[in-house]
Image 1 (tube, rainbow, N blue to C red):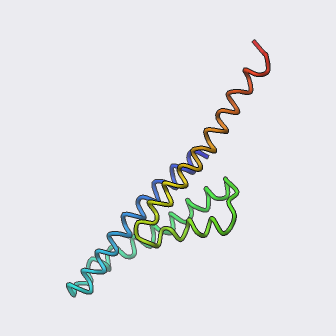
Image 2 (cartoon, rainbow, N blue to C red; image 1 turned 60 degrees about the vertical axis):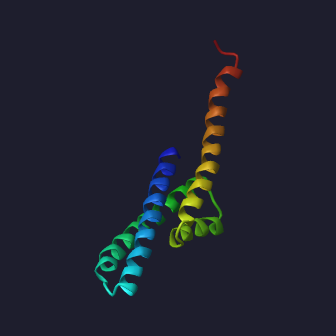
Length: 115
């Protein structure tokens, strides 16, 4: 599960930064009358967003998230800055789950009384 969390976190940051670049490129297109940047950055962001979706669904399936939560986290990659907030919250939640699972696994052998 730790690998899935790392993949999700990396993709959330990449997509979040790329989304900010897309916003800047859109401003350049409409305010500066230069579509070159958005024509380059737009498809790259689209591809990376699909990778983000795959990483999010992978994590969601491992953690058995509800469909509504999964869709909400997936949509966080479409609103500037929201992917950073979602990543932070997901990281806190999943890190707690991982710590609880590791703590339970480590506590088990000592409680069995085996030498």
